[in-house]
Image 1 (spheres, one colour):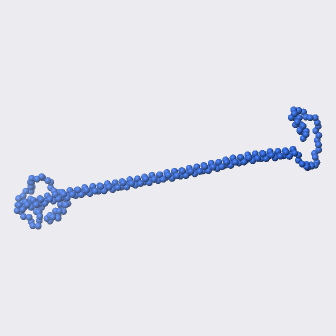
Image 2: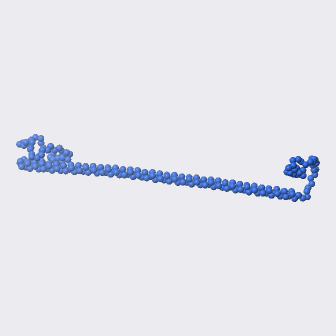
Image 3: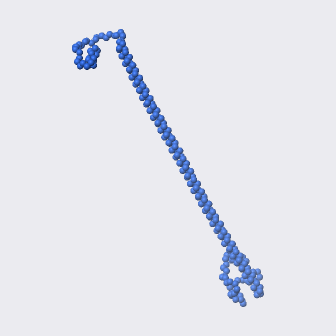
Length: 227
C-alpha cells in the first residue's frame, strides 16, 4: 500500500521516474489473526458507503415510486379514456337507436296517414259513385215518370177524342134516325160502305193520318168494345 501511494504521489507530482528501490516478494501468510477493533478510517469508510448506498437506494426508490405513480396515472388515464370512449359509443348507440325509432315512428305515421287518405279517397269515390248512380237512377225514374205521364196524358186525350167522336157519331145517327142495335155502345165496324153514305168524308178540320192502335187501346177496345 505504501509503494502504491508513493507511485501515485510521484505521478501526481510530475515526476515520471519511479523512486529507487527493489521489489521483494514476501511469502503469503499461513494464519489469519482477528483484530480486536476496527480502525476509525475503515468505520468511517463503511459509514460513508452505507450512507451512499442508502442515498442511492432512496433515490432509486423515489425514482421507482415516481415511475409507478406515472404508470398508475397513465393507466388510470387510459382506463378513463376507455371508459369515456365506451360511454360515448354507448351514447352514440342509444342516440342512433332513438333516431332509428323516431324515423320508424315517422315512417309508420306517414304510412298510416297515406292508408287513411287512400281509404278516405276510396270512400269518397265510392260515395260519389253511389251518389252518381242514385242521381242517374232518380233521373231515369223522373224521365220514366215524365214519359209515363206524357203517355197517360196522350192516352187521356186520345180517349177523350174517341169519346167525342163516338158521341158525335151517336148524335149523327140519332139525327139521321138510324137505330143502334140493343146492348152496343157503337155500330159494328165494317169495311163495306154503308148504303147511301160515301166511303170518304170531308171535314173542315186538319187532315191527320189514321190512328195507330197501341196496347192500351187494344185492351180498352177488348174490354169495352163489342164482341
